[in-house]
Length: 358
Image (tube, rainbow, N blue to C red; front, side):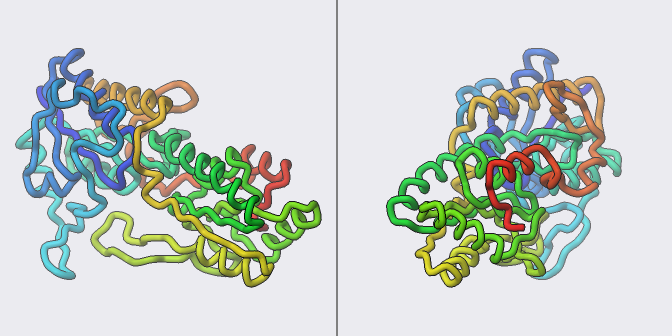
């Protein structure tokens, strides 16, 4: 029986992280009599030995709060740790030693980067449990839903509702760029919910010819405006993703962004219709989680603590349908889960007349 468990949040922040931390602490203390400590700022806090005791008092009132009380970072991979400018070393043994000084097991709340680090640490003998987190909903852990996704695409949907009225009033093309990295889940869900006319996702390379054809079809129906949702990782057929910058020490070194402006500029050139772009960016990550995300995050926190308390290490909690099932951490190393281009959502979008640019 473990006596103390450590928890950290890694990667990008997501609405619901605090709900997970709260659930872990409450379950540990009330159900198992186990102490919980938290490492500040992900694996950076582990390497710098910055740890804090998490009591019920510490997590009181954090359920509706966005972000994470522990802080987070998508850098400082202990297997590729920056020790000087341009110089990296494997400091994983030091990382494991530091964790073992404070706890008998580690719960990693993170996306594919952080969970992959957790898996690698588990391979070296550390007791690890994973908790999937990403607003992108792209983790390759069965059919796991990730908390933060519901909040993110709900906000993008609200943005589309607001943009609809201004696009219609000014007879413009308005392009909304959303997050998602290499998967189009946010774009597809928000586009369907928000009444987009065109949805461009990484899984389906688009051509401007097809996009313009949809705009012209709307013009022929006296619809003088169009709403386009584009995922940050979308790219034209035969083209490349738009990359803002590269951060070598990050678990996800490519920073995407800019495809929205590229699409708006090209559509204005091709159609002669005034075009504007709105980039939601980190607005999708902030704010209070939706009720769905609060409940999902709470369930994940309870399930992660249950696994740790019962010595079921090397697993990540996963929601398959309505049932929580542990899945081996090794699954996260198999890549991301992309939109199923033959799935029901894509088929529904096509049937109601939404163009996917192909």
